[in-house]
Length: 431
Ligand code: ADP
Image (cartoon, rainbow, N blue to C red; front, side, top):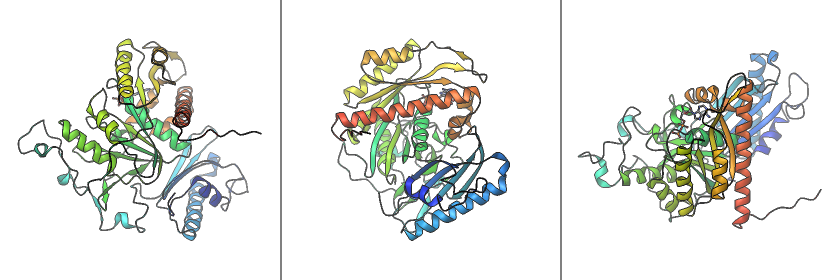
């Protein structure tokens, strides 16, 4: 970790110096601190306080926590650019959220405040590459691909990892509409909620959905010293082509443009240090996957499908594509495997269990299934994926446990994969 990085343990230790106004001890020993996520100079925490403590108390605790964290961080040669405090009740429902600092990430090695200084340039609409119709005359497509203005070309060997990024995981699907982006996003948010530093690359350059799903509409894309600065939101860092092109223009790329855009997004983003970078791929078995396989060393891929026979056939093709490209399939996710009504009643609309059978046939792990819920759709439309993990009604509880199980299984498969490839040795703990 670089000198300015905040860690989960560091944030927790700072909070031992802040009093729990309800229980009388500090926030850690009182049990109020439920969850910490830290990454570079950003941190999020979740505090459990009774609802009747009231908004003024929540704000005061958040301010004291921020002040304590900033003070100790500064003493240690670090800093806090963004700090989010979520207050939850017994059922995990979010009562109040306090935010300090911006949501756009700045480079961890830049001087304080430089993200909003003169070097930090939001990409203006007129500077944005326009994904024009194939072969449009005079379009920059003629030169191969459209460079994103202000970015420095990356000079990296093919097949390398990204500096500071431990695991790169692609999420693909045989066809569109099966919930690939939703699963990619929820995996990213779920991993971050477990305290990992996570990035999400919306590589679905033909139909980027992350601006909506993450609620990025009011935010501007920033470029700092020739690097795209990811948005820091919902505990993850995210970048999407959707913030670089006009939302109301069709995204039609020809091959080399698509490659160029994907590579620029991946390599010219200031990711900082990440435990996981999740890449949401375009649907199908097209060339973006090929570009990715050739240019990045991936930990593995996740294949998303729905239970219908036709969707499974497409998913088999997607899994085989990854295998052909020598990318390990970390597992298959069955999305929309059943519908859970708000009352918790389950309806198997598309059938159930097909993806698990398919995974067995292919000899790849099955990571789990995610039900259709009204809340997941609404939370995606409202740009609030965090709410998928905090639902308290019967459907919300099922969704939350399905997503948490998925995240847990993915982590296990990554750990197993690392052992198999000899990157990490198993640790035997005897108690
Ligand atoms: P893809 O990336 O495969 O095209 P998306 O993730 O964009 O699919 O999902 C398509 C639509 O289906 C979105 O409106 C999303 O909110 C919705 N959706 C996906 N999965 C679920 C689910 N499990 N429950 C409810 N809605 C879902």
